[in-house]
Image (cartoon, rainbow, N blue to C red; front, side):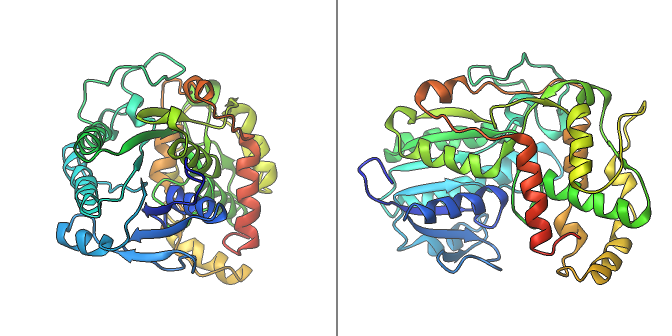
Length: 358
């Protein structure tokens, strides 16, 4: 419910992604009227009003949102480009086009922007090159690198000042949850990796760095992120605030890896002296996956739509410690938590139920 006790009218931008999809389900469960903007509304929940537009097409975005009259806008999408300069330009224009379009409606009371821990770790071109102090806190200064998160924040702040809405920025760590076709989905990636290991007799080898194997870290359950976004959008005390969001527990991969292997029915192999990136291990996945689909009667989904080898390699290959302070959200009243091992195992169970993995 909104701050005045009534369901709002939500526009979820990126509604088919891991953040937007889980958020839309949470809003629907609370009685909100939900419109979802995406480029391909395939398999979209029938309760969501589909809105199709390329966010880089200013006129198309304006036409797509005309008449939606959202009270709350949730921006949960991004586009990966070859350089961070391009990321800044493209992702900045996507957000600017959307905010300019909804401004014409004159109904927006709050805008939430989902970014992530690259705010503290740096862009992919300079990823984890500097060790910020841990746990990461929202008070930390921006890093001296180009970063499209910073560009998007500045666009959001300027639009809020211009149009008079409140805002929140949400910074999750690695997201674990249900979504297919997402560019950054470690949980699904590990489930597919395990299935290929089982099929080929390969070891389920930890692919990352010694530092990540040994260090304390955390993750974010996508359903918890949805709870956090709705809480912040409907709690006046959270207005105009940047907020970290993680599960609230911490773990080390050296302890979690064998537990995930047990849930996936594979034999674990830990860190054995050097990284073993998934992009190299899974170079033949495109050829192997169709055989697994046929053998086990799975939904015919391309492996490249399920697994994001590059992103899991980036997460597990870091050479710095990465975990997050939730103190600000706690002080403002958010008390949601998740068990991180259960975030993974619940996702693995659903992937099997939905016939995505065997």
